[in-house]
Image 1 (cartoon, rainbow over the protein chains, first blue to last red):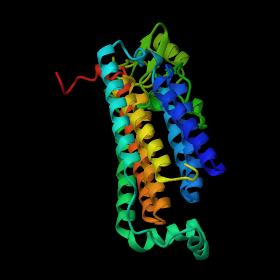
Image 2: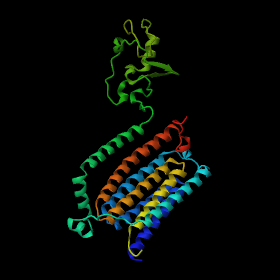
Image 3: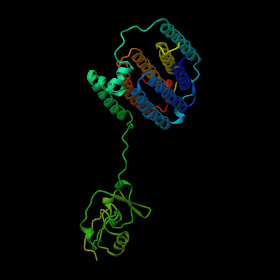
Image 4: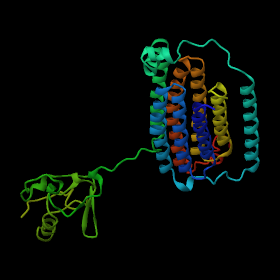
Length: 267
Length: 102
């Protein structure tokens, strides 16, 4: 048994054992880690089969991207959502084992009794090396005879990305409450609380503000306005003062200090 | 069996494919089923690259590259479907997904 076959057998056995671990592990995270082991071993086998570029792609794409995605999804999925292991379907399990063993036997018989026939191509090890290496040869192949498949792959990846966005979209769009609608509690201060500085308006300046819609309400002594636009430009204590002192001033019943309508001259 | 032949990688490919197939048949967790599908795709890649090596051809490697690209797109969509399942029916159990059956 040559060293090449020995290394191949070790890698293959490790890959198959880890692949069995993917199916048999109870915890999905353990399945994902077994899958990483399988992929790395398969990358080693790809190197042995003179596909160095594909080995690197295998590690980058599968263990670098897809497995990270899988782990993210395992994290995002609620643990209560995970079903029980195998879920108690013994008949189905036994049928799967029987079918799998039958299929493996069939394929083994087919593989071991036939030999590969065909006209070997020119791309043996020396010729590939003469052309510059595996990556160069693969690039020449892909970008000369496989232009249409490459474009189809580009479209497939684009559609996949859009589809993933559509699938991952929440059911109803989350409307993030705007800061101005977050139930502003106004004690009647000027709008300087918003971060902007306003000159305090002179007394009586609110007399011209006539608003008919109700934009705020009194809750337990606190004036709660719907949004920051409804802020009174006058402090609350001034309102009290005006109520108690100025008899000729009447207020409309549409808010406190907000939609007030001042009739008469403020004393 | 003193040197590497087609039987080696073909048996490996068959074993991996059948392990993945049994995972799809046995397991109920959609995430594990998805990983089993990835295993089957990789088994096919092993056969492609092995035949390319055996026949001194580059077509098999080119096809394997395309298979990897399609598998990447498939994984995006599969994981998106798993996310949507988990969010809408609060389960990733294939036995609970009966909307089209009922």
